[in-house]
Image 1 (cartoon, rainbow, N blue to C red):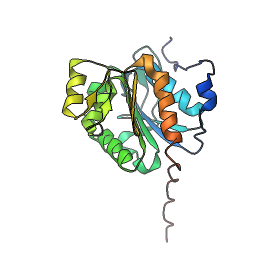
Image 2 (image 1 turned 45 degrees about the horizontal axis):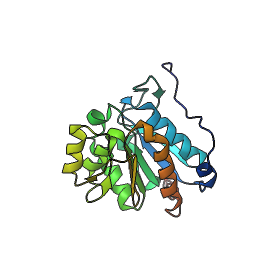
Image 3 (image 1 turned 60 degrees about the vertical axis):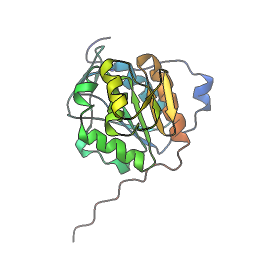
Image 4 (image 1 turned 45 degrees about the vertical axis):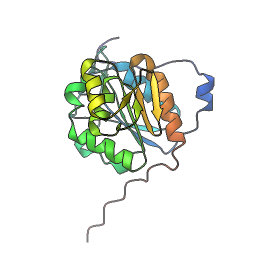
Length: 211
């Protein structure tokens, strides 16, 4: 994979693809670290979501080109501090080696995760970013998975999660996945949860007219 390109998934259609309900009108915020995000964990779920009709916005803790672990690049269009939870039906946190430094401790990300959860939206985290969900408090008392390291497992424990070693774990509207090998299944689980979650988020209210 060449630097400066964006990894895209080009898998063949499956019966699961054909059965997916349309997500037209649904809005998803995908969050990546500004460096060392995991390429497939962005590209594959994003492709699955967009194929199902969802509109995906990419956010990070800083703007500019973000570098993937395998050489892909992506350009976030929104800062986490500027994101409004009411504008989204789901928030999905991509993993990678940059997650512990940039995403686990991010208070703006924690706010988005808890608010989207509280307003009935779908919350997802894959690989090391399952621990970001734990830090935010959205995994308390729930079965969830994470890419297993001593640090990530400690975060899961401190966040009250019930760790299970599975590719993908869906507990209500909270979805976690173990790592890049599960990226497509993760995307499919997100689509299923969004399809079952009712009406899409309302469009942002227009600014009041100046008098």
